[in-house]
Image (cartoon, rainbow, N blue to C red; front, side):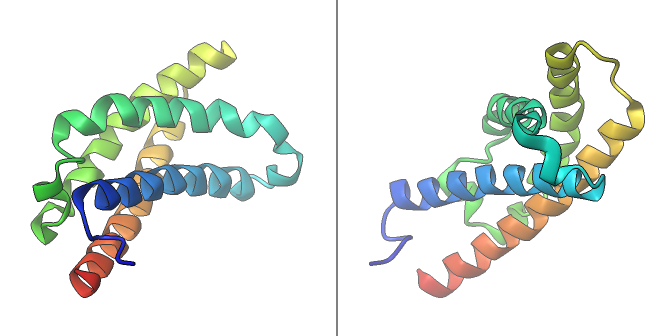
Length: 132
């Protein structure tokens, strides 16, 4: 069974990996503050806004077009999109928590998300090139 045997499977794997990447960035963020073990459902106050913002922005930049996602030259757009998603997700989070949005939080979130997507999308491209 090849995960890349058709476009639907390839796209499904990519979306699964994107969601997992966002979850990993969220978990690492809580862990870096030493609050992961006590966070509970507070993790959702970051995860859900990130998923919502990514879902709204990423498709407009072609991050789910099959011809784009399998091109090594297209490894960089998710990084740029991360820098757009971070302020939007932070704004959603600020509304959800009824709290101010710290610029440092936005910068760290954007950088962390960009790093996470560089790693994930890089792994995806390596897997695709070897298994296709």
